[in-house]
Length: 111
Image (cartoon, rainbow, N blue to C red; front, top):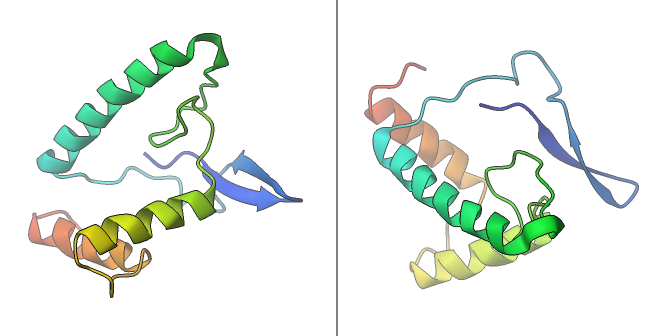
């Protein structure tokens, strides 16, 4: 479910409500993706346990090792590394939105 977005304001990262009511939504996810998200959640629970009182729970699917939002620049760096390792240097991060939409449609999700 999309319940919040991350924005930079005055040099700080802020979690804010989505811009429109339509932006707040449930996103259909195929079973293989759900399985990967469940595995990720177990790893995140271990990070939370290891962080102890340092953990800041923001309800994020992807966060730092202490639960805070990921710095967008760090995400971009990780993306460039992952795509290079996969031999996909031509693939932009933004392109994943379109690839995901095509995949969901191919899996039978409603547009």
